[in-house]
Length: 284
Image (cartoon, rainbow, N blue to C red; front, side, top):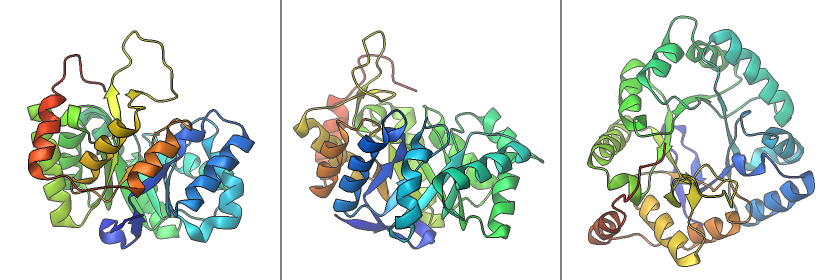
């Protein structure tokens, strides 16, 4: 599988970054099968959070013996320093590790949430203190929703984050405002040598009122050809890699698509964006 430099972290990350959200509602035996597939694919980067159900407990036994194999990123949705510090230590315990490579301000979707994170006594102070203590080497920020790129541009003005994580897919890029802000953010990250992770690469659309057939926040593509096209599109952007899908039945197809990534020409990307023009409300 292709590897790309994860910005200033220097880590040569596989383009598939294992998203621990897929293990939130599974048994340990199911999680073990997933981790065996992840290791067999050579994936060397894990992104996980305490808000992902039981994911930390499921990955913990593997990290206890395979820690050196993975660049490990964790997150906090807490907005105060005290709350984030407590959550960080709980995550270390559940994951059975003594430090993270990356600790991220998680799900910062609005300017108001950014204000809370970066305020005096905010969660960012916990991450900075953790870095001083040697509990993390790098600090990042993650977000969902249509405001994420513009919020992160402001976040980078306030603090020199090492990494960002936000949604990228053709449907979102069919929204002119989102695409403008996303491309501005990618350019800023390139200039600052900030590592970029993309999420929701294989989004077909929002669930809306339809029954949820997969353990994902959005309706995913499930056809192999569609998944490959979506992965090719996202990895043709200026990103390090893609966080894998949050459903263990679709996960092998996602990993396989990353292993068979083929860059798209600009014209092919434009065609995908045109074909993905949203016929319904964009997801958040």
